[in-house]
Length: 103
Length: 343
Ligand code: SF4
Ligand code: SF4
Image (tube, rainbow over all chains, first blue to last red; front, side, top):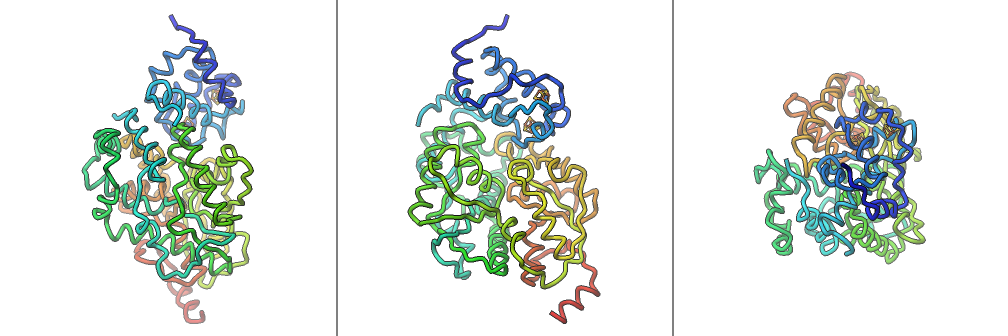
């Protein structure tokens, strides 16, 4: 059972740039990604949109191993800002897990 | 496998805020490349290195001399903890850097300076006042620390009356041109990469490059900053024949570098895959980013080939400088000699 955390949704959308809802799960990003990132743009973003925080925390390594190379974005038919979304998720983990909050 | 931990990221942030860089080099190390070049201090237009080329030998020394091939050196090194880091200065390790490697990367900055001088561009340099751009901390999503740092960098520009900046690498170009405006109010700096500045100038080649050149585009130049045509124009104008590898221009393949510090195994696998594509062309391979350069060079070793910085060829063509230690450049010798004698 996935637990929805509304505070998590608020936090992610506060950045104003998280646009993962536009994703139509076509799989182009995974096909062109040099890392073969399967979970990241298609599944983890979706979990973030619906507020399943535990999935994000479970896959920290995936989130931090994106190259930020934008091969996916260059080819995404829905204009999802994939790298900016990855940065938003990293920022969330930095604050809530690593305690790297305000400086 | 090493996850970036609280400590590692915390330390990068501490260093950025307290020392002005994720890995602090001594000021002497960062400005040494400019010795004897007579670049004026400050000015409306400045060359901005962002310390990227200068950082590479220090990172290599840390990664290799400390024998952290298997795991992430950064995690092991900083495994000492955030507290201990306050007493560690990277200057210690500078004594361990390979002088040849240092000379190589410093020389790239000298190439770029000579090229700009050949194009009659007027520019200064901020010397010790120049700072790292904060790119790594931005990519890792530590926005608060990044913002604070960016504002300090902008303050340096303001204090020196800088209006336009000539960058030497894609990451600093992207930060100063596209990212800083989102974090700093009233930001009006004009930012161009030296490749763009040269392509716009009417600099003429003194010696033709009778070479086949294979271009490795940087992801950041190609997909973030739309710098694709400039390196091609400059090489073609100098007489080189461009060979495009599989995955070129906007569809370039990453060198693996951005995750090198945290996931060296994965990064090296990506670099090897890219090197295979590049080597398959049979041309003289060039990169235009210090991170691409060091990662691909590493992967190239086991394939008995090498990668040059694009400026090494450009300086030969546009400034008539001999290519330092490039056994791989295969010239068409007859034509080459003819031009040299007439030159
Ligand atoms: S390419 Fe874009 S639309 Fe397609 S699955 Fe990936 S993020 Fe979604
Ligand atoms: S930016 Fe990340 S997810 Fe997209 S192609 Fe590159 S490594 Fe894959």
